[in-house]
Length: 279
Ligand code: SIN
Image 1: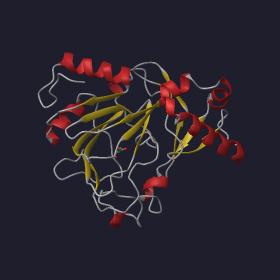
Image 2: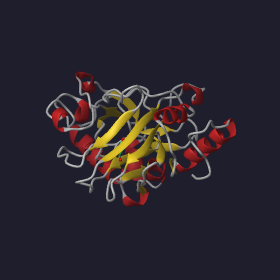
Image 3: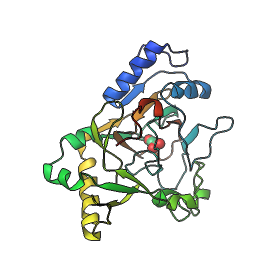
Image 4: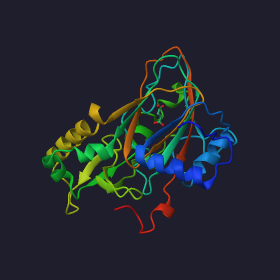
């Protein structure tokens, strides 16, 4: 979106316009924005409360901003390289995320998004029938447990300030198909990675073979090229996405260059759910 200065106080009308565009397009980019960390926080709060970032240490003086950082000479695995919906393992997962480009490499470092409303709409009836009424089991263990990808063995090699801990072994159920609280559209929610298994329609454990097959098949469908958008960054660009209906992942290709973005989380907002928790 152009023609708006996000460092200025925004009127209710402008916020409503941005919210409508966010719900419609799911990912919004605002190029050429000169934002301080205070500006980024103020902008975020127009769309909900701050979310809880359980495994990031915040930057100094801003408890709700995390630095997504990779230095030019870093050798650790790429952060957030797997498809995911942010913090889907929480009981009340975030509604969205804001990411502001500060240092952007001249090549690589794009972010990919996958539209999960479109993925569900186009899903073959046979696959949809297998996930109807099914609950997914979510957990942060693969990433943030002490033995996870960003666990104890990784901390020293990584420039990002990640704090693994035992809470990551916890699990949380969410329906595989959720209704978006603001648009009313049905959408697939989260993906293999944070999703570690399924509970069947009757609340019983799924047969292990069936579960493995469904996890793989669903992942393959959710991440098909036709649902994807590749976002190329510029410095001073703010991107906000709707975590309830898109997946995203980072990409590499910028070894030898620094990359730094500041991130805030738009938390679960009861004000947009007058009827209670999402179905
Ligand atoms: C994230 O998932 O928060 C980071 C995405 C990126 O670095 O492109």
